[in-house]
Amino acid sequence: MRVAIIALLHESNTFVSRPTEWHHFESDLCLHGEPIRTQLAGAHHEVGGFFAGLHDANIEAVPLVALRAVPYGLLTAECFQRVMTEIASALDSAGNVDGVLVAGHGAMVAESHRDADGHWLTQLRQQLGTHIPIIGTLDTHANLSRQMVDATNGLIAYRTNPHLDQRARGMDAAQLMVNTLRQKVTPVQAAAFPPLAISIEKQLTSAAPLVPLYDLANDQLARPNVLSNSILLGFPYADVKEIGSAVLVITNNAPALAEQLAAELANEMWRQRESYRGDLTDIDHALAEASELAGTVCLLDMGDNVGGGSPGDGTLLLHASRARATRKNVLCCLHDPQTVSDAIRTGVGGRCLLNVGGKTDAKHGAPFVDEFTVLSLHDGKFSEPLPRHGGASQFDQGPCAVIRNDSGVTILVNSLRTPPFSLRQLTSCGVTPQDFEIVIAKGVNAPIAAYREACRHFIRVNTPGCTTADMTTLDFVHRRRPLFPFEVTGKFG
Ligand SMILES: [Zn+2]
Image 1 (spheres, rainbow, N blue to C red):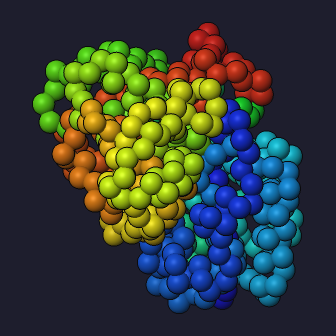
Image 2: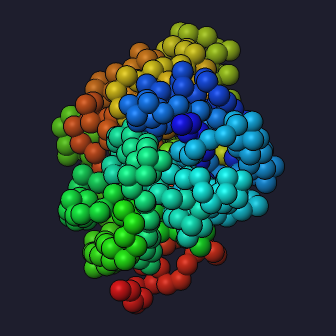
Image 3: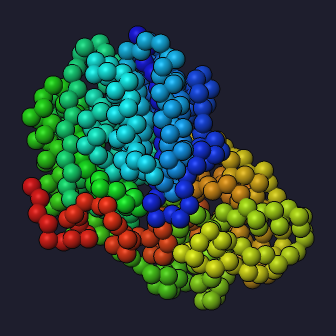
């Protein structure tokens, strides 16, 4: 038997002013055929789990296409058309396949199709017909749609955020495919869509309020005929109808049981909805709290969350810590290709006046202007051997520079937007985060997996920006209504 593998991973932030284009895929992950196996089979990634699960069952894996771009604005119509064509033509030339394993994200938006994941999975279903199983994985941050459910035989989401179980969930999907093809099970899935959106601040799966919810989900897995269940936390920064939380349950040919367990999970989420609001600590309070703490404090810049699509050049926390001046020894990473060029021209050891960051738009602060010394220059490539959020092991942040001013601010400036998923991003450039009083990380939950070995304290800061923790301040047009916490009076269950 032969099972095709297709990966298409993008989380689209519709509040970012700039779109995602084809070159963004080319500069992140854009693979066809066997190089997918070479690059991902050993990775802590769901596609690695696909290969491992098929190999264990002696089924031929046929890798077709793997596309991923760092989260950013919605895909241009042209880019999405290219993506769709790549998938359709790869499947066309694959010959007969018995099943298709898909790694989707579930929060991709295109100019032409707001439910972009629902659209590509539906196209795949139309191309394959109804008799070939489509089984796959979703990111915990999927905004699940009915179309995604209807197009597939089974979808399994990661159960951790930071996402550290991607490979395991890929293996689950492969196992479900194997058992389906060998007619040991007949998967049927049910979804429920409680009308609520969980604040990004409360999406850490190892903490309250999510722990009891996952306990319930784990209890369900032990019941007879339950093959899988998933909790979709939702991606708050996509203005789409399906934004918010959802659940999925897959049973062995027991549709009523799947519906019942999905309703049970959804009702529990609805009952807990008040606990899903964020704490919304503002910049002043965060800096005051940091000044009382000993050891390295990580300030999580929630409004400029690179892994949520933000530009990564926000300077608000740098400006605020300079104004406050209680803890001066500050480290930050900013995306700013212009400053990298200026630093390269200045050379290692040279000094120059630099306008760092704050260039993409007016939402994330003005450039941080000062005289800097260029400490070092790097090619920006690094590898991460451990499981980290996103499951990647090879990274490329493009040419980059480490610069420092005379008042203790050190900035790693890179030329490719790179979320803070690996501490190697800093250490490969000779920067030791433990040497700093304050480390600014541009994320909310994802950086914690990497940064907890270097930072003693974490403070989530409600900075403004296109990934603001307070989603009620964003201008939604398309979202479902009612939706908690926008409307608090809705009924469910
Ligand atoms: Zn995610």
